[in-house]
Image 1: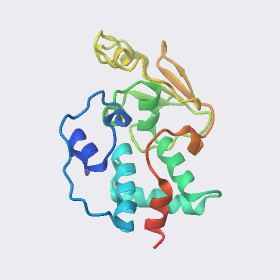
Image 2: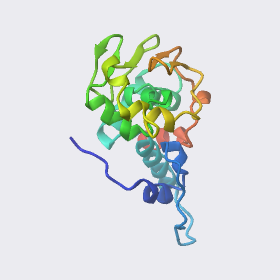
Image 3: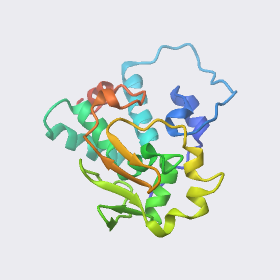
Image 4: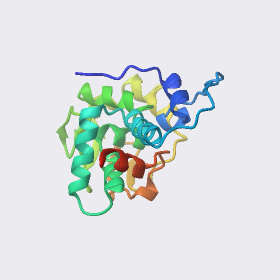
Length: 200
């Protein structure tokens, strides 16, 4: 399976975004030196696509599949694309505070720690539906990975939970109350530029 191993801070600098959107509480002191050339329209569109792919940890082929599915859905293609990315299982774990980063959330799913409606799911890209209950397996909840002083729950305690999720931290469970609208998604991506890029 292809894995994106680009260093977080280096990639954030190149895309002009803050690491906090990835769940990383660090800031690089190095500055990216660019020439003063104005970026082309294509360059702007490509950068927005790269930002979305990097934030959600999605490679080109599956990202293109998300776009094609978004086109076939009712409503705005860009908003549909962002909603589908937010409803990925790994992103739900990150948003609920059960993982520090989306990359860590994918590892948790891969290791079969997660139940969706009582069934084990080990596919990070699994699309969660409204009303689904996502939880960490009971026998895994007491592990140091989650509950220790430097565990995940302690590290994510101050993170705001989005309004479309209902989270029970004590039982390490989350329920999707509604599909998130674009206004509920706090990622710095101009999805309309992505639509323009793919529709050429």
